[in-house]
Amino acid sequence: MTALLEIKQYIRKFYIKNEVYITYLWKFLLALITIAVINNKLGFMASLNNIAIVLMASLLCAILPANFIVFISALFIMGHLFALSPECAIIAFIVFVLMFLLYFRFSPKDTLAVLLTPLLFFLHIPYLIPLACGLLGTPASIVSVTFGVVISFMITYFSKYAAGSGAEGVEAAAVEFKAMISGMLGNKAMIVMIVAFAITIAVVYIIRRSSVDNCWKIAIITGAIVLVMVSIIGGVATKAELSIVGVIVGTVISACLTLVIEFFSFNLDYSRTEKVQFEDDDYYYYVKAVPKVTLTAPDRRVKKINRAKGQR
Image (cartoon, rainbow, N blue to C red; front, side):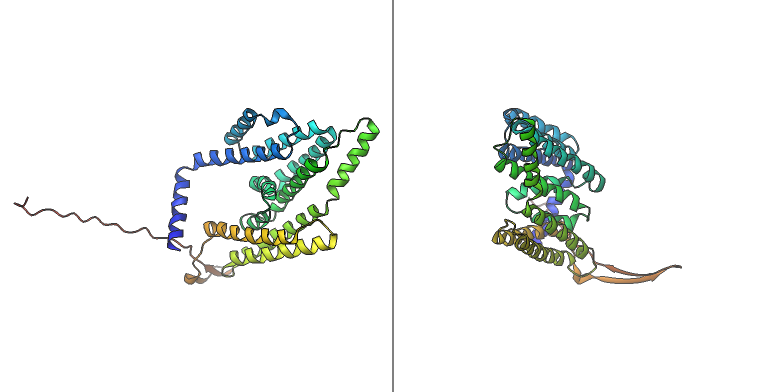
């Protein structure tokens, strides 16, 4: 444990010392990976696959606020879908307009939730997002995570099932548009994931806000169990195409990764808990103080030995 605390302290000091450069770097890498995944999954517009355009867009995202990455990603998605079919681009445009209206209203700081949800879906561990957002965010994070899930399924839907779009004629285009809307809104797996993620975020948030000892660890374990149960029950009830084994394995891996996040964000020493009571003219206060686990820097003393006079 001491070695882990030393690593944690070293990482924290390194980040504080180089925060400006690290911020530029992680925004650049996040934008680069996000755009690369979009191009790989869609890739219908050849000009957007150009490495020069990808790098320039990523560099622009690095120097601008983090929310700009969401905007650039939306442009890349709509550009690819427009090359596939104008109807697809219209659907994406409607989704993104609703997202930006609600996202900037309720959770404008949840940039990572919006971007990482699709990325983790493609890595088959999206269950990390609701657990982490419940620990580090607020119930408003449900909005960002919901749109992240919708974007994930939208990209998957268009990359798999929209290859034959592009009907000619007004009537045929209208029928095609209606079919795509039904395909998106009628995706039972997407609805189950949205409900499961929302419930998990709420449960984890409520438990980690309590004053129970080890509340963050309890929140992670409880949230993982709730996530698995809701996903399986919802999948069976709606006959959605969900892999039960994938849900269980992905949730276990996500819970382990969330414990790592908990170690770096919320590491307390419950053996030194203190309870204090005091009052003023209007209230009587019961305070529970739990100290953070800290690592005392070793006291290095240099002892200088001088040679006796006359000695060589």
